[in-house]
Image 1 (cartoon, helix red, strand yellow):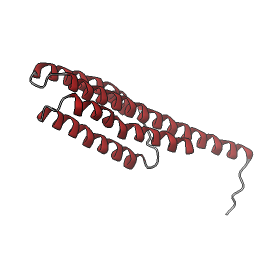
Image 2 (cartoon, helix red, strand yellow):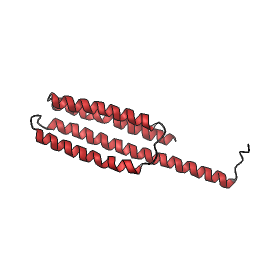
Image 3 (tube, rainbow, N blue to C red):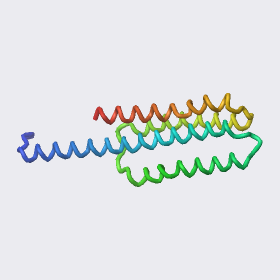
Image 4 (cartoon, helix red, strand yellow):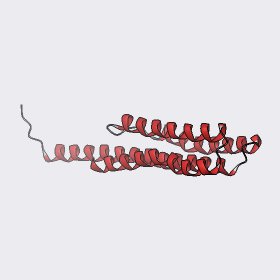
Length: 146
């Protein structure tokens, strides 16, 4: 089998490789932006819950509605704009969002159910962000490696 490429074929192959790498890098950036936005929003939400009196349902519901609306914006933006997923993305993204969901669930469920207040919720606000920030970092690091 002859593997000799003409100069034009080699240039086309290199161009296709460059375009594929650029698409993967752009997708990684989209996912990282979403992850950082979600980490920030969920951290601020948990922090805000620590400021609110546990016996007042209306402010908690209003804060929750604002959080859901704020999270919906980047999520709706992400879904139709990204056409590719980087290699290993599903596992990495699944682990990051799964860990985030566990920490977020613990923070909100325990914080509200047991009225634990700022002493519990404010440290949990930082902890909630960590899984998604680590996931975003790893996604960008892996995309940079190509």
